[in-house]
Image 1 (cartoon, rainbow, N blue to C red):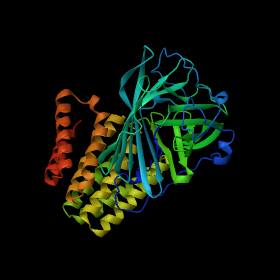
Image 2 (image 1 turned 45 degrees about the vertical axis):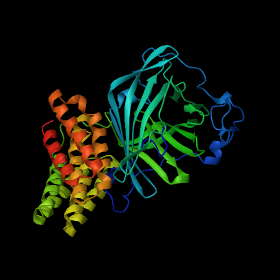
Image 3 (image 1 turned 30 degrees about the vertical axis):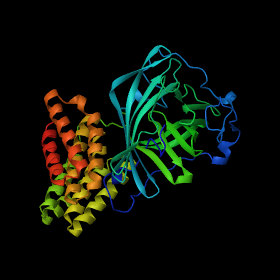
Image 4 (image 1 turned 120 degrees about the horizontal axis):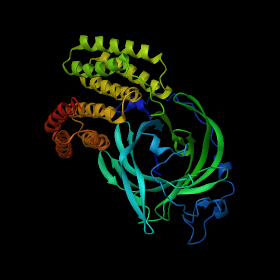
Length: 457
């Protein structure tokens, strides 16, 4: 799929622009050594081979993806190691060097029909959104289908890659049937030594996966998970990436040792959902962080101090109930950052830290509420973030904030009625235009109007 650990990230620093990197409290999965995993590969030396001649690929005798299966019920994807149709949203966190990453993978309520050799195949659509230190890196739509034998196939992706909030390229975009056949992304019954290629367009995109274990244990949001699969993935640029896939979660961990990259699942729903309403402590964290944002803007530091004490107490209490470890780590860092910022009585820094904290709190709410409802809350936080960036005259961040909002809206709009949806869509369009033009006052005004439109959704 995508490079730069195209599937995972660290919720403890969603918006943070200038603080030190957050703590990573994840337990690392034991992965195969690069030299050992690469053994047995053979160089590509013919035009018919499906990769660059410089790559050392596995022989065809090891591949299990050379014959296309049939697709009678393609949108029911129940393969336990890639259960896309059962996962409504996954949050993945990690670091790349000293950059905090956050990825959100969300099942969209739509079907994309793709034609291949005269056959119409329905595929599920999943949105992948990646952020580094709070700045949008990539927003993509991925297309998946399950074959009758239980294997899952990758039918392509629409990719938008951003630099400093500006669309840089659409590298990696491809579509099965139009560009190349689909690629296997998960075997029905993987075995050690199996080789398959999720992406296989010579000179454009390429991934070759080799299964190295199917009996691993990984540390999940609720405790150990057994029967996980480890793979080594050879990429088009020759980089080797180690990944794990866990039952009920799908892609769980990704690591590139040569590039100091590591990402891991922090929470996935509904598998990590908790029955019952949102706990009072979580609501208190939501309201106190929002109120701290307002109080800091008004330079009411007595109120800010009281609110920080209140949310610190609420978090200490709620943490003891059993919170997924990576989310708990993110909350610890966010609470500490807000406490420090409030102590400086710097309005912009405190508002920034309040937004950071509020965004991590949405992962706690995700355990109790639908992803769409949580994404509405995230949109409100993003609207506040735009006001912070406008006040700080951070023109370079505003367009990226607007793109982030649009990504959230793309997975939320189906739950909003027509008139409200039309109003929000118009505001988002106006917001993007004002942000791109660098009109700070207008951008802030539209963000405030958007917040009013989101109230009550």
